[in-house]
Length: 465
Image (cartoon, rainbow, N blue to C red; front, side):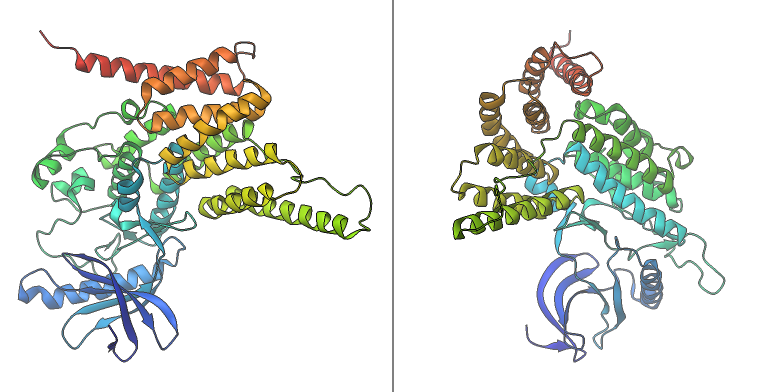
């Protein structure tokens, strides 16, 4: 499509279409940058169109005021000669959580907590600015190629405390929200509050952890009824490897009464603590790449071969450092590509580098897990662990983490019996370790949760009399 809109914006490709309009990738020829352009149309009666347009413009202004890295920047808003409203915003490169769930299934627990923490931080900022999203759901949440979350579509947002100059504008009798993620108070027609967003966050976290929303039914009305009147199945029952504190937080977000849910600020703090604890546990058993992946020259390089070897060793150390930095910054896609390049470089060395390559493969598998590619991570661990066992033995520190990560990957892929068997074997190999050893604590908790899950599944299969 070559026609420029308003002599400035050239549409490139459609990104999505819904009941409210379309979103296109486009190019702004005035500023020479790629942007996203959203076109909206009123879905109400003709006489509500002016009301709809004013609400749209006002809420675009609210969104533009947020100025948060987790919200796409608003560049322009207006109305085309054909009557369509348009919004020009930052173009976000990435995938929605809906797409990620479709492609890869459930998220690893630590990744889900990190995603939820970023969403909660955006909500906390929005609530401080007096704005409620009102329609938080996986399709409105984008994970960028660098693993950062962008909260999309504040387009039906409402002001928490409208001023006399800018009163709240809503259509009479309108209920905003998506049935699978709507709060109980919204479902019965009450106004959305900041705690309504937290309920929706609980629904999102529940789905990316379990692969399904808290409630499903044949009709939207039936789903809304369940949100109001029924309790969801415990997330711990569906993800037995999930730490108890994390599962409890999800269920508190899903409390029926708004005042029983934590605020966005409290949720941010709780998730930071949970992610920090998970990171600390991982660091206690993380496979570290060796500081040197090629030998240092024994003396100042004098020959061409020695100079070449020294330069190659320095380049490998720099690449290793960049990979580790990206991993620590949670840029797992970048770290994954870096580790792949590092493995290729190590394989081309004139000296044996088998151990260094295995260490890199362990880090690469960890990145796959963090990116939600659990099946690929499991496959990598299944080929890696036997090689590490042969080199180091079953209880070496460099073997424990891949063995534990393989066990967790099995559980996250739904192989609960195999995961429990793997965990039991690892626990038996650690029988000489002290009871309070971090690996023992993690394994005992995992084995207990897997056992409860398998027992519950067995009971559900028994015929009733």
